[in-house]
Image (cartoon, rainbow, N blue to C red; front, side):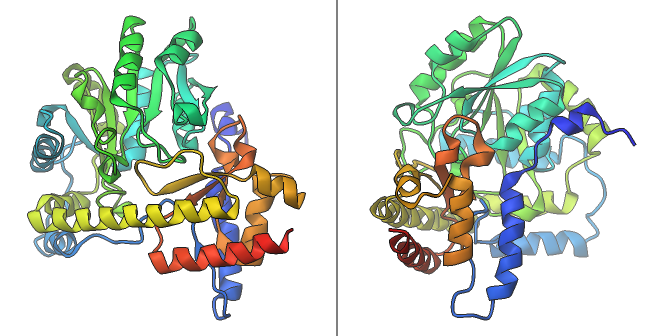
Length: 397
């Protein structure tokens, strides 16, 4: 059976390949004095708060399980619209909001709607691997542009201008970013968007971690800049609903019918039960709980980053959002003789029983020297992980 060239272009999601290996080892050490600690997957350890869970149960009890419109329930779109106004002081009409089966579906819909075969999309290196694969699945080409710590591992308007070519269609950014947890300064984002607009291109911004921003100067939505910006968001991270598979996108009014047509054919509609549950995310008690959890994520960051630096796993830019640490392990590799971050990640997994993610997934420029840590685990687990890695690294000297 012939496999399509499109499918063959999609590389494995190495984050999940490492996770499978960690899960197998976890079963072997589960009942030992050193069970596996997972700092590899970007999934909050919190689950949906009580009001959200109850809303889902009520929807099932009331038989509210039929299809919704492909663009999602109007009531939920209106709640999200209100949230933008209250949280970011930005007016986003519900008519521009499309509910999707997770942010992944939103990115897929955006790419299919806007990218033709041969189109190039500029992205920072490092960046979330699936984003470039969405571009590839739409027969486009992701062009990775190396970035540095001095640039907060984000694109600049100058680099966009320099890299723009005959086939360039636009940019796909993430703010805050996975794997770095860093955001684009709003002034620089404005300059990038101005350059893209000048070229007649599209500015697509992944904002799924925006709710988990810790610095007011960065915690602003790109939608404040221009109605032509396309924003992707999700209920997975700030709202702690990963497995519920629910997200949304904000698009220019004229694009909504195109997205709707694609969504009708590809997804029918997002999960109805998840949509009813998500309505409860915006209740005052739920928002208060999400904010308490955001403060907890920040406290974990404030502990873990200095601890990594002390171990010689240097984090060159303090994350201003999300729950990641992008750590340069060059000095550890040099001292230990270990080849790269891939081998180091497996050494840490097998000897310290701490699962981490090597940089291999996230780009090509220098990512072999980086490891991504997730601080979505509890503070006690983070502290144990640090102690285990300290022992492991001291044994390598």
